[in-house]
Image: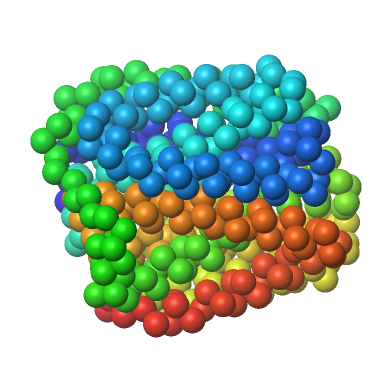
Length: 387
């Protein structure tokens, strides 16, 4: 199953650390940005960040091909650490905008590096187990990050959250240096197709086209939930950051409970399609219910948010497994395009929220989000079943 077990474990380790650093400020970023641009324009600031990311990420495969995946990863991590520290200490909104954009770009680009490393040492026969195990390991970080964030952000001390997020990633540099011999990919030949050739891939393989659409819906969901659930629960419902840390920790447990069993189930028995559809239905129902809930009861919100992530965890695992069963490690251009779905979804999602908040109260965002998830059922149902 694995070409190099040590390399595989090291990828898991620095994936865990990277995910923790990424997750730690994720749920306070909207409140942090709100201090500088106001709640209505948080979405616009994120839109700017994602627009720049899309441009940079389009050229990223050429950078990896030129410098190698290993060297690009080291450079990217150093830039990320510097930008995260600067976010913690700068107070002018223009500087915040600049380094938020840089940090946002790094977060998106490094996911491509991780994919290339992981795809190079795994095979399609075990793709479900490999990918869902990796997702589970990184999602452990996402589960423990909110409760850590709640402790650090007491008194709205957002700068401390960013400082710790930067410190966590420093060991990743040394892990990569230690693993240089096994992770270096100087001899790796990557495909580099132009836009017209990539479009032809979508025409020849409708499964790739449909799974891209499902991935877009999932990332759109993440954008809205990450940016506006914390603001909604903190500012409008009235939960403290201590309480939100606990709520978000419980909310994220499905990512470490369900993804590995779902991956094994998909590999051995029923394939990804059925699990994907079930996940979308759960996501849609639970997200739509948020619009109707006015309770301030802690357990009510724990339950409904937990259900949203039950659905999301299944969708995330299955869209990941399905996509990587369609390609191999040489398809870096397709991998990069697949990871471009995230900033593209965040761009449209953030612009979407700016428009909605100009017309409706904030809770309407979640009702419209449920409709978007409903639209994701069609491409999921059109996928060719792998079993």
